[in-house]
Length: 100
Figure 1: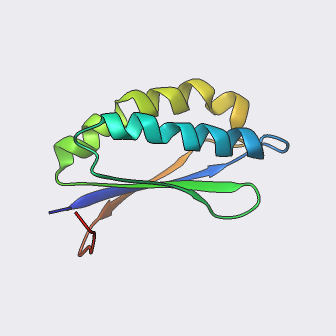
Figure 2: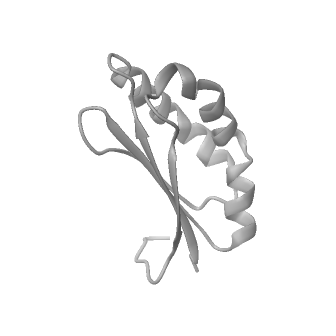
């Protein structure tokens, strides 16, 4: 059962919107390699605003994700792609319906 999640809001630098979109699309391959990340969504919230929502069965999975390859890639590319640091929200999952 999913118990915890993250929502990360990303604001692209002007002119970097396509680069952020491509970066997030490529993140799916990394997310698929993380056994402790059963749910991962890359989102476009507006013309230059993006997000990532992911959910985990426990805090250990969430912590592993935050120190994993996706977080490392985001950290390495943030200065080039983002207008501001990622806004990370820690979320408790109260209920979920997923075809598992």
